[in-house]
Image (cartoon, rainbow, N blue to C red; front, side):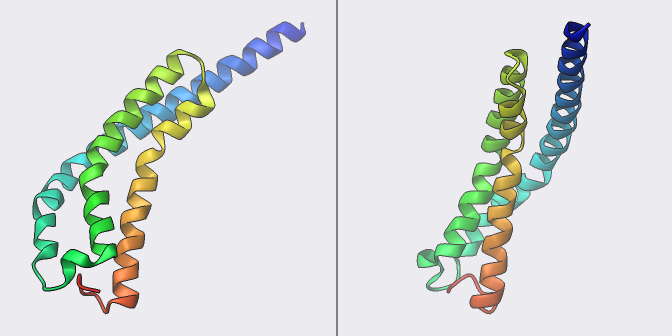
Length: 121
């Protein structure tokens, strides 16, 4: 009887991971679309004098440009790990775009607080 409970736990774990991966794939995939105009306009952040040397501005641009790549690589890697039954790493890999978004938000907050909202800090 203990074998069936272990199998049931594995099936539950697999199903929860599958649901998370499906939801993460849809949400982060859809978020690529609004990021594309932001990526096209990100070069304008370097228009003000001194902004090309501003670390928060550079971090924000890198975060914006890297988002589609991080999302695609993270989701593909997550599904590969899911097929190989490495569920914990699959969830972490699918969650990588969250880290990218948080870095961008942190750069924006830093510029708002310490640079008075300007891109040249």
